Image (cartoon, rainbow, N blue to C red; front, side, top):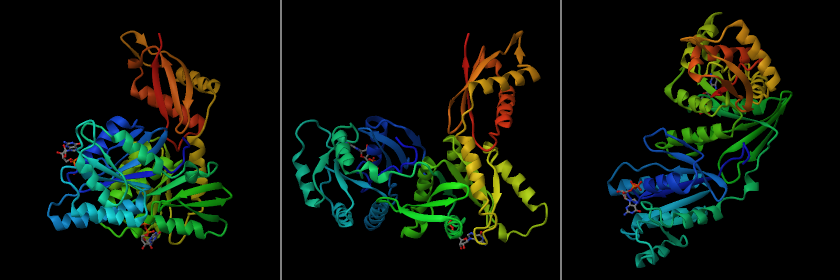
Length: 442
Ligand code: GDP
Ligand code: GDP
């Protein structure tokens, strides 16, 4: 599976109580091998990366419908379907065999049908195994193809349903991507200046820009080539402008941010200088950190701040505290509006990218280790001293090191931190997350 490929999106829609959440959980719990599962912004899980017959996709729960009065339900279902039509490659419409076809089902089915988006019709709560129930045939009336009898609770029928989804996924070569370029996710709250930044970059004279339509999705990647290299800017800005719906935008903007992070090599975390750090920033930044991506904290709208010669330093100190969980991330203060320091971003992006992808030979690592352990003795406890035998780099993106020791419990946090700092400073790994895995060896 290629790193930067945009995963196809499969959305689950349907009336309240038909079993959407049950299905979603069943699919991630059982039939799909889970690559990763991220707790959503809302209490519901909003998306999970899954695999079926060797193809990965993002499974998206379009979100619960909270209200229960009939007229509001229909309105919300339409919105749900609209969003799914806008965002998804394949839509699974879930219905309930016990209720039969309802007016709301018909309304949504006809919207989906008009959109031309591939739809799979799931008829849930067909709990008994064997011949499908007679009631199933009524669902042909929805005019969106064969109904798949499933039981989300027990899992029957979901394999056939996933096969149908699989057949409708866009061909893999349509999702292919420029593998040579450094992929950059521009993330941040609405109004922080993401589109302004992309437009500013696209407007720079030295940049060659091309817009590649993101296959069937709304996302548009922008390719930029300049003296620092070739970059693909993964757009998450379009969301707010395109969606007609306001309620679930938060949900979708965070979802898209996560997906952009997954595809990215480097994340630009945009902060509004006039607002400073917010909770939402820490959520998405935390995700980038967990995924081992290099990040740059970009403070935008710097032109709006009244400055003297200590302002930037004070700002940076404050943000360092806010982002203490990713203290490696460098800061850049820009104005997307005036263009101030925007060109400098690319050198920084390349720098942290190269660090994130760096491979260090075992020989060099162990030289540094030997030097570090002579300079500061490994700790001891009750007469036993920590011995560090050997260290090697297991993988890149992020650089991950395995350290073999006699006893892991003697390898105290502070000494690990010391070794980490030695490695970071020697090899210039200052702007990327790194991981250390401690292994005991007798
Ligand atoms: P949602 O509102 O569409 O997300 O529906 P839920 O997943 O919350 O399910 C609504 C109710 O239907 C719950 O009480 C579930 O336990 C029940 N339910 C879901 N799937 C099945 C099923 O396959 N068979 C049966 N008998 N009940 C189900
Ligand atoms: P997005 O929602 O993150 O894509 O944000 P936009 O790019 O649409 O910007 C939101 C608003 O902030 C717009 O009115 C922009 O003109 C304004 N804006 C963006 N960047 C800057 C900046 O660097 N300085 C100033 N003064 N305004 C900015």
